[in-house]
Amino acid sequence: MAISHPMAELKQGGSSENRRKQLLFRAQRRGFKEVDLIFGTFADAELGTLDEAGLDQFEALLAAPDQQVYAWLRGAEAVPGEYDNPVFAGLKAICEQKSPRWKS
Image (cartoon, rainbow, N blue to C red):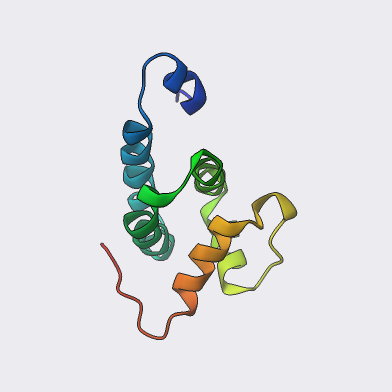
């Protein structure tokens, strides 16, 4: 499995828009339904507004194991410092909504 290097792709003529499309696709197809819904909903609503640092934070969270991310989102485990950022706060806010509007 090849590892994508988004910054290298941008330097080689890739676009920020392509990166956003790839992140949206990955967010909706992680393989863990609950996490797919949370990440997909966040990505659909917020990816267009994230700067490069936000995109990097989102991509790092996408690379974290599903079970761990889900435990962090539920509050069952403490969020490691490297993931405790504004993007994670946005994901957590989706989980805390009384009636979230899931994108599937």
